[in-house]
Length: 215
Image (cartoon, rainbow, N blue to C red; front, side):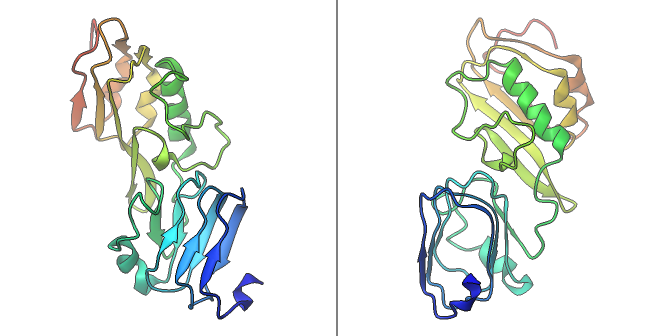
């Protein structure tokens, strides 16, 4: 029924832990939307770009907008990390904008095998395999759409004191293009499981400054 507020210009609800999907696509008078620090999982808007403040919504991976406005939102000044978490996309159909479950679980395995819980983790690196959190907002992870489905395409950590090994589950990141694990100290990252060789899309591998003994 929020759509009945057809003259609403300013909608501010920061820091309220509001969850679920929000549809305000019929309100074309909005000039400001402040929804930082909530837990919304979906958002539908119905007008051309305007200021939206949506950071710290870890479950939001896609914002649905009219087909005619997708490109305008993608190229807008409001499509930056000042306004949105990393990995949030604009589309006229948000189906497929969560990474496949096996990729989420592969990232959790990576977290656990490389010393998860130490100083390299991000605010929203999520170890709950059943969570809806936006993987593209996790520290060091980049996602992109591949044939209409969101996938993990890059992992990058620099000087984060990773320990242990890169697990065999890395093979489940089937669209991974770049794996960059720089300068983790002389006694930290020691091994990559042989399944690393199954990443057929990998175009960049940078393991400078680790303590690997074989590859």
